[in-house]
Image (spheres, rainbow, N blue to C red):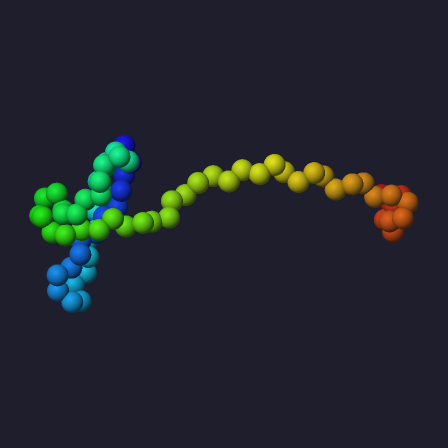
Length: 73
């Protein structure tokens, strides 16, 4: 089950929509009415989060004879 965010569609200009969450199967059709009040609603598409994993960069190559710091320690 996935948790979806919905918001009411205000009937009056300037009224604020109210958001709520509901768990639904991905195969279920989106709600068109608030389950308790019957107000019209729309699904809110919100950004999620994820984990992006990358391999670490290889360590820098050691200095060679062409480097100004070569041999200095």
